[in-house]
Amino acid sequence: MHVAVMGTGGTGGFFGGLLARAGEKVTCIARGAHLEAIRARGLTVKSRLAGNFTLPVKATDDPREVGPVELILFCVKTYDTDTAVEQIRPLVDQDTVILSVQNGIDNAERIARVVGSKPVIGAVAHVFSAVEAPGVIAQTAGPGRILFGELAGGTSPRTERLLSTFQGAGMAAELSPDIRVTLWEKFLFICGNGGVTALSRLPIGVIRACPETSALLRGVLEEVEAVARASGIALPVGCVDQVLAFNASLEPGARASLYHDLAAGRRLELEALNGTVVRLGREYGIPTPFNFAIYAALKPYANGAPPLP
Image (cartoon, rainbow, N blue to C red; front, side, top):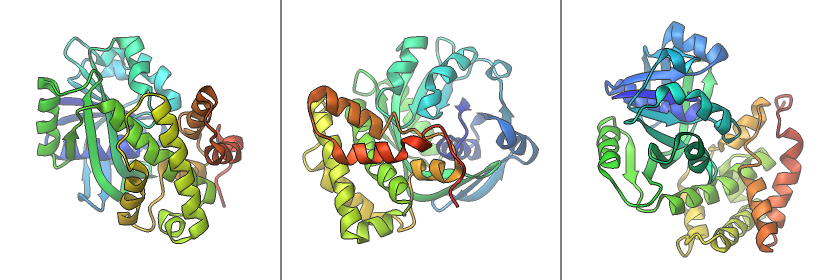
Protein backbone atom coordinates (compact mmCIF):
# COMPACT_ATOMS: atom_id res chain seq x y z
CA MET A 1 0.00 0.00 0.00
CA HIS A 2 1.33 3.44 -0.93
CA VAL A 3 0.84 5.70 2.07
CA ALA A 4 1.44 9.45 2.17
CA VAL A 5 1.86 11.00 5.60
CA MET A 6 0.61 14.57 5.42
CA GLY A 7 2.19 16.12 8.49
CA THR A 8 5.04 13.92 9.70
CA GLY A 9 4.96 15.10 13.30
CA GLY A 10 4.58 13.01 16.42
CA THR A 11 1.44 11.16 15.35
CA GLY A 12 2.07 10.88 11.62
CA GLY A 13 5.72 10.01 12.11
CA PHE A 14 4.96 7.28 14.64
CA PHE A 15 2.25 5.51 12.65
CA GLY A 16 3.96 6.16 9.32
CA GLY A 17 7.15 4.70 10.73
CA LEU A 18 5.37 1.53 11.83
CA LEU A 19 3.84 1.11 8.37
CA ALA A 20 7.21 1.65 6.69
CA ARG A 21 8.86 -0.90 8.97
CA ALA A 22 6.19 -3.41 7.95
CA GLY A 23 7.10 -2.95 4.30
CA GLU A 24 4.45 -0.50 3.15
CA LYS A 25 5.57 2.22 0.73
CA VAL A 26 5.54 5.39 2.81
CA THR A 27 6.15 8.95 1.63
CA CYS A 28 6.58 11.60 4.32
CA ILE A 29 5.41 15.12 3.57
CA ALA A 30 7.26 17.48 5.85
CA ARG A 31 9.15 20.77 5.76
CA GLY A 32 12.21 22.59 7.02
CA ALA A 33 14.93 20.91 9.03
CA HIS A 34 12.69 17.92 9.73
CA LEU A 35 12.34 17.27 6.00
CA GLU A 36 16.05 17.63 5.36
CA ALA A 37 16.93 15.27 8.20
CA ILE A 38 14.54 12.58 6.94
CA ARG A 39 16.00 12.92 3.45
CA ALA A 40 19.57 12.69 4.73
CA ARG A 41 19.32 10.11 7.52
CA GLY A 42 15.90 8.48 7.24
CA LEU A 43 13.02 8.56 9.70
CA THR A 44 13.95 7.56 13.25
CA VAL A 45 11.32 6.35 15.70
CA LYS A 46 12.14 5.95 19.40
CA SER A 47 9.22 4.19 21.01
CA ARG A 48 8.44 2.71 24.41
CA LEU A 49 6.00 0.42 22.60
CA ALA A 50 7.66 -0.45 19.30
CA GLY A 51 11.36 -0.08 20.05
CA ASN A 52 13.86 2.13 18.27
CA PHE A 53 14.45 1.99 14.54
CA THR A 54 15.56 4.10 11.58
CA LEU A 55 14.27 3.57 8.05
CA PRO A 56 14.95 5.25 4.72
CA VAL A 57 11.70 6.76 3.44
CA LYS A 58 10.90 9.11 0.61
CA ALA A 59 10.31 12.65 1.87
CA THR A 60 9.16 15.81 0.15
CA ASP A 61 7.47 19.13 0.81
CA ASP A 62 5.54 19.01 -2.47
CA PRO A 63 2.68 16.49 -2.84
CA ARG A 64 2.76 17.05 -6.60
CA GLU A 65 5.99 15.02 -6.69
CA VAL A 66 4.16 12.00 -5.27
CA GLY A 67 1.00 11.54 -7.31
CA PRO A 68 -2.09 9.55 -6.28
CA VAL A 69 -1.73 7.20 -3.32
CA GLU A 70 -3.93 4.58 -1.69
CA LEU A 71 -3.93 6.09 1.79
CA ILE A 72 -3.27 9.56 3.18
CA LEU A 73 -2.57 9.78 6.90
CA PHE A 74 -3.76 13.35 7.36
CA CYS A 75 -2.05 14.40 10.58
CA VAL A 76 -1.58 18.17 10.37
CA LYS A 77 -2.49 20.51 13.19
CA THR A 78 -6.09 21.68 13.16
CA TYR A 79 -5.14 25.24 12.23
CA ASP A 80 -3.45 23.91 9.07
CA THR A 81 -6.35 21.71 7.91
CA ASP A 82 -7.84 24.10 5.36
CA THR A 83 -4.48 24.84 3.72
CA ALA A 84 -3.24 21.25 3.82
CA VAL A 85 -6.35 19.75 2.26
CA GLU A 86 -5.84 21.93 -0.80
CA GLN A 87 -2.23 20.74 -0.99
CA ILE A 88 -3.17 17.04 -1.00
CA ARG A 89 -5.31 17.25 -4.14
CA PRO A 90 -2.51 15.70 -6.30
CA LEU A 91 -2.47 12.70 -3.94
CA VAL A 92 -6.15 11.91 -4.37
CA ASP A 93 -7.86 9.81 -7.01
CA GLN A 94 -11.10 7.82 -6.99
CA ASP A 95 -9.65 5.05 -4.81
CA THR A 96 -7.74 7.13 -2.27
CA VAL A 97 -8.67 6.96 1.41
CA ILE A 98 -7.99 10.01 3.59
CA LEU A 99 -7.67 9.16 7.28
CA SER A 100 -8.02 12.29 9.39
CA VAL A 101 -5.93 11.57 12.50
CA GLN A 102 -6.20 14.91 14.27
CA ASN A 103 -7.37 16.59 17.42
CA GLY A 104 -10.69 18.41 17.41
CA ILE A 105 -14.17 17.39 16.30
CA ASP A 106 -14.73 18.85 12.83
CA ASN A 107 -11.62 18.15 10.73
CA ALA A 108 -13.17 15.34 8.69
CA GLU A 109 -16.06 17.58 7.68
CA ARG A 110 -13.65 20.37 6.72
CA ILE A 111 -11.68 17.95 4.53
CA ALA A 112 -14.89 16.61 2.97
CA ARG A 113 -16.00 20.10 1.98
CA VAL A 114 -12.97 20.30 -0.31
CA VAL A 115 -12.50 16.77 -1.68
CA GLY A 116 -15.96 15.32 -1.09
CA SER A 117 -17.06 12.95 1.64
CA LYS A 118 -16.34 9.68 -0.20
CA PRO A 119 -12.60 9.39 0.54
CA VAL A 120 -12.71 10.63 4.14
CA ILE A 121 -12.59 8.41 7.22
CA GLY A 122 -12.45 9.80 10.75
CA ALA A 123 -9.86 8.61 13.24
CA VAL A 124 -8.42 9.28 16.66
CA ALA A 125 -5.04 8.34 18.07
CA HIS A 126 -4.18 7.70 21.69
CA VAL A 127 -0.44 8.20 21.67
CA PHE A 128 1.96 10.63 23.33
CA SER A 129 4.60 11.35 20.73
CA ALA A 130 6.47 14.35 19.41
CA VAL A 131 9.33 15.42 17.15
CA GLU A 132 12.30 15.09 19.50
CA ALA A 133 14.78 16.43 16.94
CA PRO A 134 14.72 16.86 13.16
CA GLY A 135 14.03 13.44 11.69
CA VAL A 136 13.40 11.85 15.11
CA ILE A 137 9.99 10.88 16.51
CA ALA A 138 9.81 10.02 20.22
CA GLN A 139 6.81 8.05 21.49
CA THR A 140 6.94 8.37 25.26
CA ALA A 141 3.58 7.29 26.70
CA GLY A 142 0.10 6.06 25.97
CA PRO A 143 -1.13 2.83 24.35
CA GLY A 144 -0.32 3.88 20.77
CA ARG A 145 -3.87 3.05 19.76
CA ILE A 146 -5.70 4.24 16.64
CA LEU A 147 -9.47 3.97 16.19
CA PHE A 148 -11.25 4.80 12.95
CA GLY A 149 -14.55 4.45 11.15
CA GLU A 150 -16.78 5.67 8.36
CA LEU A 151 -18.28 9.11 8.93
CA ALA A 152 -21.76 7.67 8.38
CA GLY A 153 -21.08 5.03 11.03
CA GLY A 154 -20.35 1.34 10.89
CA THR A 155 -17.66 -0.56 9.03
CA SER A 156 -16.96 -1.15 5.35
CA PRO A 157 -14.65 -3.27 3.18
CA ARG A 158 -12.12 -0.45 3.07
CA THR A 159 -12.05 0.03 6.84
CA GLU A 160 -11.65 -3.73 7.24
CA ARG A 161 -8.73 -3.63 4.79
CA LEU A 162 -7.08 -0.77 6.66
CA LEU A 163 -7.57 -2.61 9.94
CA SER A 164 -5.79 -5.66 8.54
CA THR A 165 -2.92 -3.53 7.21
CA PHE A 166 -2.52 -1.59 10.44
CA GLN A 167 -2.64 -4.65 12.67
CA GLY A 168 -0.17 -6.38 10.38
CA ALA A 169 2.19 -3.47 11.01
CA GLY A 170 1.95 -3.97 14.76
CA MET A 171 -0.41 -1.04 15.30
CA ALA A 172 -3.00 -1.25 18.07
CA ALA A 173 -5.83 -0.53 15.63
CA GLU A 174 -9.57 -0.84 16.19
CA LEU A 175 -12.71 -0.05 14.22
CA SER A 176 -15.18 2.41 15.74
CA PRO A 177 -18.89 1.72 15.20
CA ASP A 178 -19.65 5.42 15.74
CA ILE A 179 -16.65 7.59 14.93
CA ARG A 180 -18.42 10.80 15.96
CA VAL A 181 -18.76 9.55 19.52
CA THR A 182 -15.16 8.33 19.39
CA LEU A 183 -13.99 11.77 18.22
CA TRP A 184 -15.78 13.40 21.14
CA GLU A 185 -14.29 10.88 23.57
CA LYS A 186 -10.83 11.89 22.37
CA PHE A 187 -11.88 15.55 22.47
CA LEU A 188 -12.90 15.09 26.10
CA PHE A 189 -9.54 13.52 26.88
CA ILE A 190 -7.36 16.06 25.06
CA CYS A 191 -9.23 19.14 26.32
CA GLY A 192 -8.68 17.90 29.84
CA ASN A 193 -5.16 16.53 29.67
CA GLY A 194 -3.91 18.96 27.05
CA GLY A 195 -5.45 22.00 28.67
CA VAL A 196 -4.33 21.23 32.21
CA THR A 197 -0.80 20.03 31.38
CA ALA A 198 -0.27 23.16 29.28
CA LEU A 199 -1.80 25.53 31.82
CA SER A 200 0.13 24.08 34.77
CA ARG A 201 3.30 23.17 32.82
CA LEU A 202 3.19 19.89 34.75
CA PRO A 203 3.08 16.21 33.73
CA ILE A 204 0.01 14.12 34.39
CA GLY A 205 1.57 12.34 37.38
CA VAL A 206 1.93 15.59 39.34
CA ILE A 207 -1.53 16.77 38.28
CA ARG A 208 -3.30 13.62 39.47
CA ALA A 209 -1.36 13.59 42.77
CA CYS A 210 -2.35 17.15 43.73
CA PRO A 211 -5.98 17.49 44.93
CA GLU A 212 -6.36 20.98 43.50
CA THR A 213 -5.05 20.25 39.99
CA SER A 214 -6.94 16.94 40.02
CA ALA A 215 -10.14 18.86 40.79
CA LEU A 216 -9.34 21.30 37.99
CA LEU A 217 -8.98 18.43 35.54
CA ARG A 218 -12.29 16.90 36.61
CA GLY A 219 -14.01 20.26 36.22
CA VAL A 220 -12.69 20.67 32.68
CA LEU A 221 -13.87 17.17 31.76
CA GLU A 222 -17.34 17.66 33.23
CA GLU A 223 -17.82 20.83 31.20
CA VAL A 224 -16.81 19.06 27.99
CA GLU A 225 -19.25 16.25 28.75
CA ALA A 226 -22.08 18.75 29.30
CA VAL A 227 -21.34 20.51 26.00
CA ALA A 228 -21.16 17.17 24.18
CA ARG A 229 -24.58 16.10 25.43
CA ALA A 230 -26.04 19.48 24.49
CA SER A 231 -24.60 18.91 21.01
CA GLY A 232 -26.46 15.60 20.72
CA ILE A 233 -23.44 13.36 21.28
CA ALA A 234 -24.23 10.27 23.37
CA LEU A 235 -21.00 9.94 25.31
CA PRO A 236 -20.89 6.83 27.51
CA VAL A 237 -22.25 7.19 31.02
CA GLY A 238 -19.30 7.67 33.37
CA CYS A 239 -17.01 8.98 30.63
CA VAL A 240 -15.30 11.48 32.95
CA ASP A 241 -14.41 8.75 35.44
CA GLN A 242 -13.20 6.60 32.54
CA VAL A 243 -10.76 9.33 31.47
CA LEU A 244 -9.50 9.74 35.02
CA ALA A 245 -9.07 5.98 35.38
CA PHE A 246 -7.13 5.89 32.11
CA ASN A 247 -4.96 8.77 33.33
CA ALA A 248 -4.07 6.70 36.38
CA SER A 249 -2.49 4.14 34.05
CA LEU A 250 -0.37 6.67 32.16
CA GLU A 251 3.32 7.14 32.74
CA PRO A 252 3.72 9.91 35.36
CA GLY A 253 5.81 12.03 32.99
CA ALA A 254 3.20 12.10 30.22
CA ARG A 255 2.30 15.49 28.77
CA ALA A 256 -0.10 16.19 25.92
CA SER A 257 0.83 17.76 22.59
CA LEU A 258 -0.61 21.12 23.63
CA TYR A 259 2.06 21.34 26.32
CA HIS A 260 4.85 20.34 23.92
CA ASP A 261 3.76 23.01 21.44
CA LEU A 262 3.61 25.63 24.19
CA ALA A 263 7.03 24.68 25.53
CA ALA A 264 8.57 24.90 22.07
CA GLY A 265 6.99 28.25 21.26
CA ARG A 266 4.85 26.82 18.45
CA ARG A 267 1.27 27.72 17.56
CA LEU A 268 -1.35 26.09 19.72
CA GLU A 269 -4.48 24.13 18.78
CA LEU A 270 -6.25 26.17 21.44
CA GLU A 271 -9.20 27.34 19.33
CA ALA A 272 -10.00 23.77 18.23
CA LEU A 273 -9.85 22.45 21.79
CA ASN A 274 -10.76 24.44 24.90
CA GLY A 275 -11.78 27.42 22.78
CA THR A 276 -14.39 25.26 21.06
CA VAL A 277 -15.76 24.16 24.45
CA VAL A 278 -16.14 27.80 25.48
CA ARG A 279 -17.90 28.76 22.23
CA LEU A 280 -20.28 25.80 22.33
CA GLY A 281 -20.97 26.49 25.99
CA ARG A 282 -22.04 30.02 25.12
CA GLU A 283 -24.18 28.69 22.26
CA TYR A 284 -26.01 26.23 24.51
CA GLY A 285 -26.06 28.35 27.66
CA ILE A 286 -23.71 26.03 29.56
CA PRO A 287 -21.16 27.63 31.92
CA THR A 288 -17.58 26.59 31.14
CA PRO A 289 -15.43 28.47 33.69
CA PHE A 290 -12.66 25.85 33.87
CA ASN A 291 -12.23 25.70 30.11
CA PHE A 292 -12.46 29.48 29.90
CA ALA A 293 -9.63 29.84 32.43
CA ILE A 294 -7.43 27.58 30.29
CA TYR A 295 -8.45 29.36 27.11
CA ALA A 296 -7.85 32.83 28.56
CA ALA A 297 -4.49 31.95 30.13
CA LEU A 298 -3.12 30.31 26.97
CA LYS A 299 -4.62 32.74 24.46
CA PRO A 300 -1.54 35.04 24.46
CA TYR A 301 0.52 32.02 23.32
CA ALA A 302 -1.95 30.85 20.66
CA ASN A 303 0.07 32.09 17.69
CA GLY A 304 3.42 31.07 19.13
CA ALA A 305 5.76 32.71 21.60
CA PRO A 306 9.34 32.34 22.80
CA PRO A 307 9.98 28.81 24.15
CA LEU A 308 9.45 28.34 27.86
CA PRO A 309 12.63 28.58 29.96
